[in-house]
Length: 145
View (cartoon, rainbow, N blue to C red):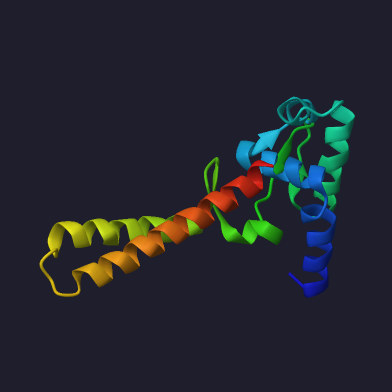
C-alpha cells in the first residue's frame, strides 16, 4: 500500500468514528447485512449502516455480494496495527508479552527459587508482566469505546 493511500485510509476510516466502528463490527462478524450492522451498532436506520458499508467498499475493506450482504476484507491500519485477529477475537499484541512474562515469573518461583539471582529475575519478570498487562488493558479499552 502506498503512503498516500495509507494516509487517506487512516484519515477517512480510522479517523471517522462510526465508519471505524462498522469496520470493527465487520471484522468480528465476517459477514453482515446493513440491517444486522444497524442493530448491532444501534444506528438509527439501515441506510446509515449502508452508507458506512459503501464507504468501506471504496477503500476495499468490505465486498458486497449479489444478495446484499457484505463480507469483510481484513487489513491492518491505524490503531489496528497494534492488534492481532484470531477468528472473532481482536486482541492487543501486548497480551502475548504479558503471557510470556507471567510464565517467566511463574517458572522462576517454581524451578529456581534458590538461585542467587532469583529475586532480580523475579522482579524483572513481575514488572514486565504488570506493564504488559496494563498496556493490554489500555489497548482493550481503546476498541471498546
